[in-house]
Image 1 (cartoon, rainbow, N blue to C red):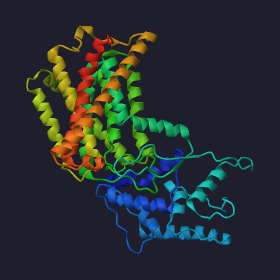
Image 2 (cartoon, rainbow, N blue to C red):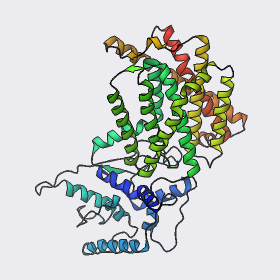
Image 3 (spheres, rainbow, N blue to C red):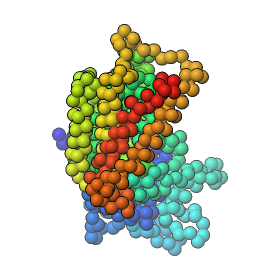
Image 4 (cartoon, rainbow, N blue to C red):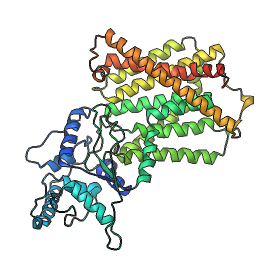
Length: 496
C-alpha cells in the first residue's frame, strides 16, 4: 500500500510533466510579474484551492506550490536549502558583471524547468541589458543551442502564446518557447479531439454520412463518460499541475479541477467504443481498426501532459476510469437504446433524468466552467434521445435489418466526396445557426424569468438558475436537430 502511495505521488509530481514538456521542446518564460499574476489568479479562481503566502518564505518557494494538488508531496527543508545554495552560486557568477540576480527564483525556474539544469554563463544580451533576467537566460540558451562550429546562428525556437483565453478569468496565458513545432501542432490537434469544435463536427459527420445507428449509441456513451468524469473531478477537487515548473501551453480549462482527465476519458471512450460498435457491422481489417483506436487514445492522453493541463496520474486515471465505464455500458446499450426508441414515456423520463443530473452536478461545488460543459453534454444527449424517439415513431431514418449487414465501405469518387462535404457544410451551418438563435432567445428570457441582471452576460451566465436551463435548452435543440431536422432537410434537398 505504501509503495502504491509513493507511486501515485511520483506520477502526480508536476516536475514529471515539466520534464516531458522539456523533452518535447516546450520551455517557459517565467518572469517576476507574470509569476505573481499566475499566483494571484490561482488563488482567486482555482475552484477554491487557495494557496496562501507563507511568511518568511521566499517567492520562489511559494510559486513552486501554486496549483499543487491535495496530497502532493512537498519539498523537504534540506532540498530547499540546497536550492537556495545553488541560487546563491548562480548569483555569484554574475557579480563580475556588476549585477545581482533576482532573488524570487524566476530566472532559475526558467532555466531549470522540468528538473533539468541548464548551464548559465555570461550574459549574451549585450550592453545596457539587465543580466540574469528570465528573458536573457532563455535568449542565451537559444543562442548557445544554435552555435554550429563556433558560428552564432539564429535561435531555433519561436515564442507563442496559448491559442485560447481562460474561459473563466479571461487570462490569455503567458508566452512560452517552442523548439519543436511539429510536436506542437501534433499535440494541439490531439487536444482538439476532446473539444467542442470536434464534437460538433465529428458526431454529425458520422450520423449523416456513415451510420446513424452507431452515432446514436456512441453519443450515448460519450454523454455518460463525460458526465461521470466531470462529477468525479468536482468531488475530488484536485488542482492542476503547478506552474512553474509546468508550462501552461493551454489555459482554456485551467480553472477546472484536474482528476481525472476528461479529455483522456473521451479520447479513450470514443475510439474504442466506435471500434467495438462497428466490429462485425462494417467490413474492415480488425487489427487496423484497433491500432487506429489505440493511436487516437494515446495522442489525446499524451497531449494533455504536453499542454501542462494534467499530471501523468490524472491521465492514467482517466484512461482506466473510461475503460471501466465502457465495460459497464457497452453490454446494456441495446437495452437503453430500445427503451429510448419504443417506450411511450421515454421523452418525459429522458428530460427529467438529464435535468436532474444537471441539477445534482451544479450543487457539488462553486461555479466553474465544468458546470456549463456538464449541462451542455446532458442537453445534447437529451436532444439526441428525443429525436431518435420521434424518428422511430415517424418511420424516419430506420435502422438496418440484420440481413443488410455487414456494411462495406463504398468506392471513393468525386461525386461521393462532393455529396459528403455538402452534407457536412450545410448541416454544420444549420447547427451553428440553431445555436446562435437559441442563445439569443434563451439567455434574455431566462435572465428575465429569474430577475438576473444582464449588464454583464458572463456573470449572468454563471448563475445556476440561468446557466442550467440556457445550456440545456440550447444544446438540447442542437442535438435534436442533428438527428431530426438536418436529415429531414437533406431529404428535401435530395442529399440523403
